[in-house]
Image 1: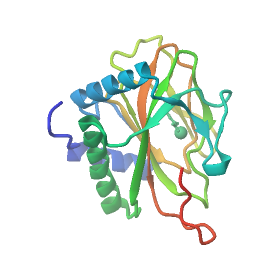
Image 2: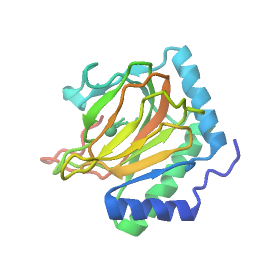
Image 3: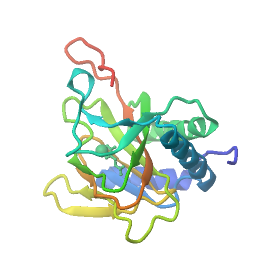
Amino acid sequence: MSDSPRLPDARLAELIDGLVEQGWYVGPSFLPAPLCEALHTELDDMTAREALVAAGIGRGDNHHLRRDVRGDAIRWLDRESLAQRRYLEAMGDLQQALNQALFLGLFEYEAHFARYPPGAFYRRHLDSFQGRANRVVSTVGYLTPDWPADGGGEMVIYAPADGRELARVRPEAGTFVCFLSDRIPHEVLPTHHPRASIAGWFRRNASLGGLVDPAR
Ligand code: OGA
Ligand code: MN
């Protein structure tokens, strides 16, 4: 892994244009290949050590498992490895670029590794709900090299207005997706191949009824 996780300005500008013009962006070869390799190896190790947990839906007391909704296994990033710190540094650069260009007031980033075993999917959903939008911008970075043509597992992006399919993204290592969390419906089609990614969210601190943003 090189010691420069910096995202090129031209790619950041392209991402910001995508968010402004359509509310979403898909960037092939966006993340540095050596960083994706290191993160992929780390996720493989976690899988072998059984360090992942079944993902649920909802937060806090509302958190529950729904295998009919999503079938991935996750682990939150904790900055324990160099690769994680590099990834989070790159997301810090992105946060700064988003705040400068769009005045979003993003103040925090949370992210988890996700592994979808063959057969797993994540039904169509939004990442946050209007009016309670503590998650403002969603990110997904893909880590699986040489994604097979018949591997399935595409991420589908839908139009907020009429539900039309707008894009289908192959989860190939290096591809990075970014979208507005409360606007863009999306789903993960059933995968036929183990699928590795990092899903993350830039947050604003939403104060709800005098309570600060509840913990995940
Ligand atoms: C999510 C999600 C998409 C993907 O974790 O909320 O929508 O392509 N992930 O992994
Ligand atoms: Mn999502």
